Image 1 (tube, helix red, strand yellow):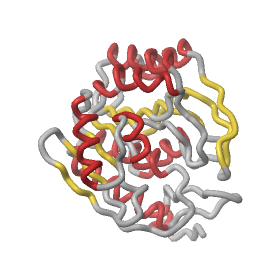
Image 2 (image 1 turned 90 degrees about the vertical axis):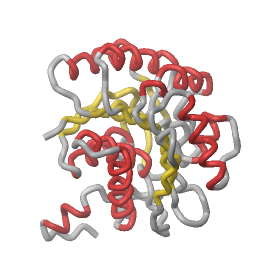
Image 3 (image 1 turned 60 degrees about the vertical axis):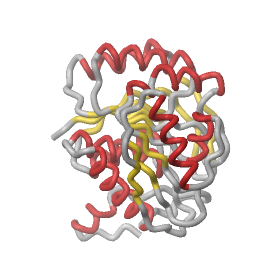
Image 4 (image 1 turned 180 degrees about the horizontal axis):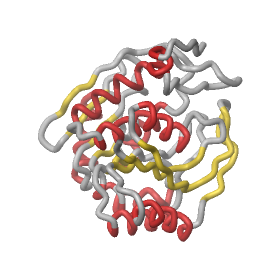
Length: 268
């Protein structure tokens, strides 16, 4: 079994962040581990607060994993401040991390800033060049590139800009567009359109975390980047289609739906 590490924030209600990541790793047959960068106060109705973990503790967590366990892929999610990003970058370089999936989590669905504005340039300088694949949604692509991203042509242009920042591959997620949920994968030479069914549900909490974690798990298992993204897209589509109506707001995706079906369990 391959071992996959998430470096991200904690989600109180379990739908996003490290909780979603570890559920995804498990659902896809890998062993999940975590380095917590922040503790958020959130539920299905929004994010209400955040306490960052100190850089020394973040580095110590990373050391604890890499000095003991082989890591086949790493997913990075919420990294909110400059010193956090620098600490992570230092350790990733030290351990020559492979299959790094960077999900540049910046703003929650409720509008809470999950990354301090001054940290953007540090993320671009320190983490994007280390990434095997970067997975921004449209608002995140706009923040990183400084351009408006509203259609497929804009998505291609933004992917090229982020690629030129040093990423090996870029996946621009089109979930915020009104029509088809089309994502664009750019490997430096070719644009691959990955189309998905538009599922009409309010319960989409943690979709970005889940998709990037699924990509990391698939890369850990030896899939090509194209295979990893396509299979992750299929996984998240099923998870959204059978999302859970938990709480009073935006419910989470159903990470284990396929496994529950095979086991004959009812989950609704």
